[in-house]
Image (cartoon, rainbow, N blue to C red; front, side, top):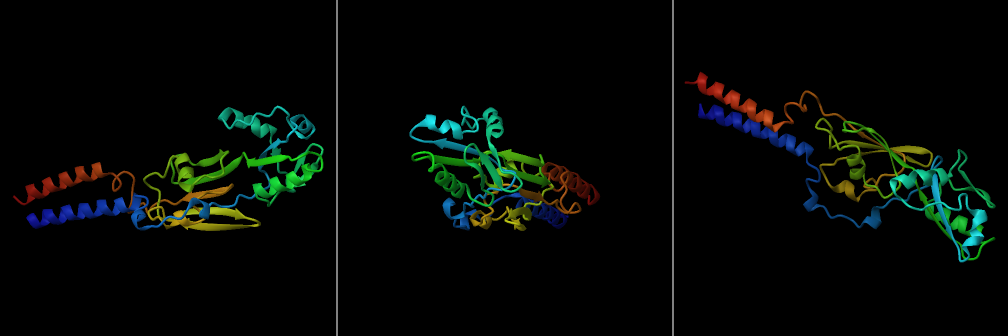
Length: 255
């Protein structure tokens, strides 16, 4: 009798432990040496369809007016102002060009924001003294699909956004989501690459996939429904109730 009960309790504990290991992130974090953020921060390349906020300054601000698409553009990053910035921003057309007053078209597709800043500064130097140029992408998009609570396409104005932040924006993984095999589909130049991420470990935090890039697609696979289900194995309360009922039945039968 005691052996039966002990065996049953051990089985329940083993099931619970197995599932705990399946859902906890960063299980080896104490053994992982994390690199500096600057070492893994990816280069962000301007792509067709991006909307750019271009901030121009010079010693004589009045001389800038002919070069501004919107002379009174508000540079605030608040949620309400972001919509205005997108309207006033510069769209990278299907051929990779943006159009600026006076300068006309400039090809920026495939350049980093730093490279595009340098290019525009050189062009503006033909007309202005010591121009300052700052560029950022304001329609940075990514898509999260699969076993998350709020799947969809999201848009942010800050490119330095981590994978965990992206998943949190999508409501995090639900109990059916497989945490050890997150798939990221990324566009690099004219090709697509895929990467599998194990969130239960920490080594991926030293990879280029710690930060997401624009137009990334993040897919969360479901667990095997016969092994991991949201209503039973993943619920410790249900396990406790079932264990109590079964143990009571064993006691009654063996009297």
